[in-house]
Length: 463
Image (cartoon, rainbow, N blue to C red; front, top):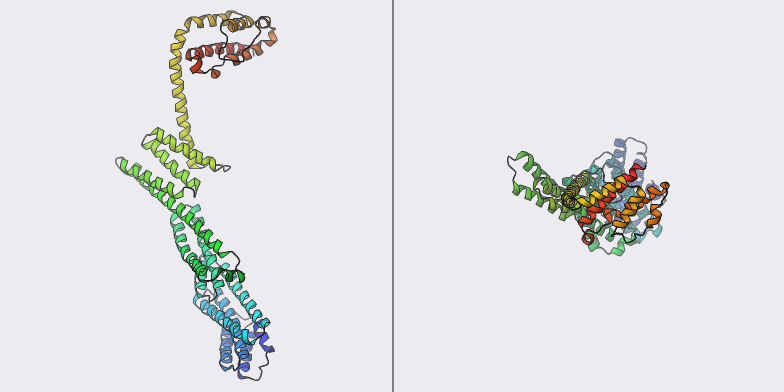
């Protein structure tokens, strides 16, 4: 009640304006502690008295006092109608509150002390903060409606800025939440609604000197806020439209596979086009969304078009994108499991094919090596380990092993407890994985494999 009580300090007790104002003060003070309906009644009667005071004022000091009382009473009516959820009356008294406050300051700058004017401005800022805080305490749907209407009604550019910034943030948050649940329609709707307050903020930047905003304690750098939100909204719109394209592709693919009587290849290619458009929209904006759409394309190449090479190329790209998402654990993500399982299937097929080709080629060389293998197997069956190793190193040294160097005499006289170590060393010397086929040939590799088989058999027998 600072505004009302401060009027008592003005020496106007004998004027008609002062009498009307004192009458209004009685109604105002009488509202304290009453039920909302009765408070509204008392405040409206106080307004009637303050209007009389304004009409009967004969000096700027009296007009300042009347405007101030009108402003603060309208503020209380604004908050009461906010609580009653009566937006129209709330807005009406909010505009009245701001208008009367501005009039008090405008006249007071020429007739009242600097302290008096600053006190009014300080209290008005507090009133605006209270209204803003009340709006922010409401549900999001209600909050957005009131922010729109109060921003449009506010005579102060700085109040507009704060409310418009909050509106932009609310709509952007709606878009983010919608994307998390893959609701592209709601996300696009929120971003479309966000465009209007964001454009109004740009207009404010164009029509007002930016230095003025800073001098009036603008909480954030408005220019940076607008630019950041434009970039973020553009990114979210691309992701939303990408999600929309992917869902259109999913729907068409589902129809083509399950509903259509015959497979329509043209429809399948159209599905791929939808997924490709989705990738273009989300590229560099959301790696996971790009990976999901690529996985869809890879699955079509794999299961429907049966183009294995194409499918492998696409799905390998998916796994590369997955690497960029580390350290996030993707093991439970459907798209990652699907891409990984298909690539694993291809790898197994390739290994099986290589192994089959190798066994077919190996048979030819086994026939060519039949006599040598007969001697090899006979020696391993009949000779001691020391003698067979001495024979092997002397007759068939591992020509591919550049580090091969042994003492044949010490091998022949090696004690029994060193034989396992000698066998293990021989396995390393002759191991086929170390053989360069281009240099030494496939026949030599097959021969080395047979040697290692016999060496391993002897080693296993000693365990």
